[in-house]
Length: 233
Image (cartoon, rainbow, N blue to C red; front, top):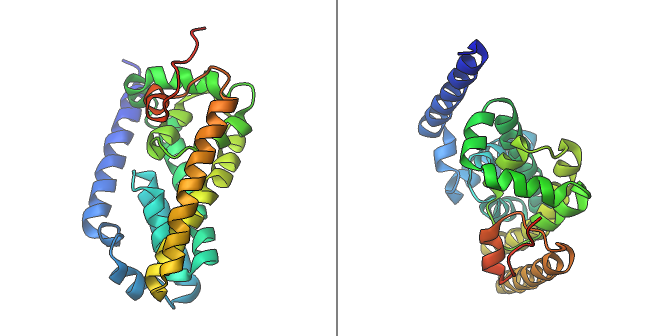
């Protein structure tokens, strides 16, 4: 057996063990607690901002929904700053998961998601930026799985990352609105957030229907959106 395969496997095991240790022993385990935001982030200046970005990025990298981070961003910072920081945190999580798959977990991800990797390659090959943006605007699908699959696929990193950041913005704004509404006890923030979520979801589904051109990056997503099966090549 090639020694590189052994070393890569050991690196995966070590990284997962380290991640488990961090979740157990650090503040990552209490990320979803508004009290943690009040204590460690709000009013702490640059150090609080960087802590929010670091914890939010790591959390999204391991599968915490980015909408949760946006909610907490709105709760901690208000609508606009919360939206920006939550989007950057989700972007950081995207980069971490992408390169984890590309550099360490390639064999594991390839074995688990071989079909999705082929679909993603086919879906984004001609227009990686616009098709990645289309994926990110959808109201359904797994952010973590998309990041991992992209890391193993042939998609170029720069258009994938930039389109992901842009595509994260609408839902970041929606959930920052809700989080900000909870903080200031403003019902209109919450109502507006819910309304925008519905509008953004419908718009994302319509854009996918219009521009996918018979292709699919995930059959489960197609089923949830009521799309016809993708054309066979």
